[in-house]
Amino acid sequence: MTTTENLVGSDFARLSHRISAAGLMKRRPGYYTARFAVVIGASAAGWVAFALLGNSWWQLAIAVFQAFLFGQIALLSHDLAHKQVFRRRRPTEIAGMLLGNLGIGMSYGWWMDKHTRHHANPNHEELDPDVDPDILVWSKDQARASRGVPRFIGRYQAFLFFPLLTLEGLNLHWSGVRAVRTPGLRRRGLEAALLAAHFVLYFGALGTVLSPGMALLFFAVHQGLWGVYMGSIFAPNHKGMPTLTGRTELDFLRKQVLTSRNVRGGAVTDAALGGLNYQIEHHLFPSMPSPHLRRAQPIVQAYCAELGVPYLQTSLVESYRQALTHLHEAGAPLRNRS
Image (cartoon, rainbow, N blue to C red; front, side, top):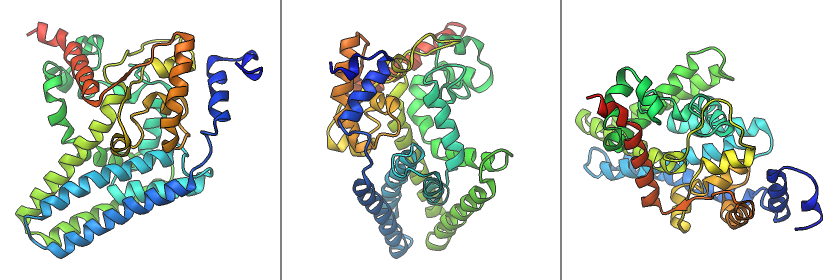
């Protein structure tokens, strides 16, 4: 260790010094310029192809393509919300609302608030909105206390998880609509106008170019696959990891590392998951530009080994297996009551 690292401070402070010394918190404007250009350009090209194809079965290929790009736009919105792209708040919010609200019909302000609370208390059953038992139950205690839909679905939720993800895109739309109808959302009027513009343009395009039956099929494929893609990006990160309750005595580093899971992979995995396969590093340093997460990973893993803090990294398939196994075990009290 260097002299600086021997100074009195938290475990996270010492890790943060190593990360900063490696230059991993520096901005990457060139990377994000290129990434924005590729994603937005590909999406625009896809909609041009949609207009030129007309009422054709080939439109289903466009639906699949745009489902992937909606996910990529959501990932860019995620990086914006964490201030990985811009330092200042105003350009961050403008770009976030243009991509989120106008681009994919998801409220940027609603999602940012929800995701910020998740980062503050990952996998905490009372404080993390991502483990609210609104549809699924995430622990046996939640299963025992469940009522209504979670109680009904929870019995076999591991088998229903991926089918339910086909509704996640619609859930994101509806959550945004509810958010702009509720006082308290920052820039509520602008967010509502941009959401309305998205829906008018989207449904107007489907109604103009496609027959009613084909429009309905395009909508189902596009929105369903987008939901599955979004769920598949976020499910490996925390599902199946330890959940917390009450007042936790864990410090910041352990709270983030012990509740998160990394997914091994190369450039394709990094691109498909937007760098969130380095979930541990992302939770420790949320404003770190996503291309630096790969370089931070061995530093963080080695430091955790020094401290004796468990650090979990698996394959993508294994991450899903662990998540589904956890869901099945969490629903056990509901099956035992049958």
